[in-house]
Image 1 (cartoon, rainbow, N blue to C red):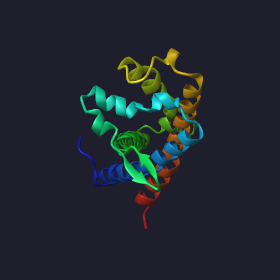
Image 2 (cartoon, rainbow, N blue to C red; image 1 turned 120 degrees about the vertical axis):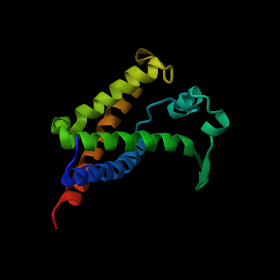
Image 3 (cartoon, rainbow, N blue to C red; image 1 turned 120 degrees about the horizontal axis):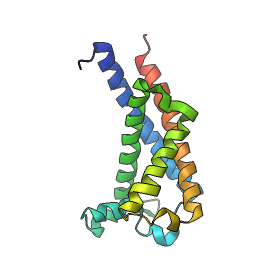
Image 4 (spheres, rainbow, N blue to C red; image 1 turned 135 degrees about the vertical axis):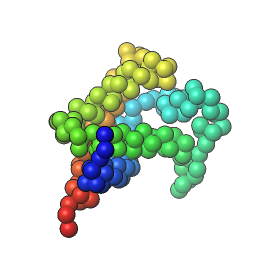
Amino acid sequence: MKLSKDQKSNLKSAIIAGTIAGVASGFVKLGWENVLPPRTAERDETNPPQTLLQQFGIPSKWTHATYTYSGHKLPWVSYLVHFGFSTSFAIIYEVLAEYKPFIRKGACSIFGLAIWAAFHLGIMPMMKTVPSAKDQPTEEHISEALGHIAWMWTNDVVGQELYRRLTSKK
């Protein structure tokens, strides 16, 4: 299938908008988790991104690597995974939304909940990255489900507005 010049431009704009929205929404999700932490302190000693990387054979010394800012040790490797996931799904969402607008239903909360269910209730427990859904605390389900709604809402609002601005005729 050959894309027209406008379609190529629109696809490029959707990718740019999704990338920027993914970074912004990644910060929203990190902020959300500071207010409603999804995991106990003990389970956060090795968080899911670190666990996943270790399952792929990356040594703990790398997965737990930190940088220090304002006296706090921060897990930069976890942040790479976090923002990589956020940006990847924001791009997928923005591109899909241009071709299949129905995914914007419910201010994209349905899409956000679907991502949460797929990864936190299905894929990650199946891979043993996190406990099975029934063994996760209720607080984790609440934080993650609501956090995924806030995350995807941010992707929707930021991505849609940036896409509009990038594709509007001047």
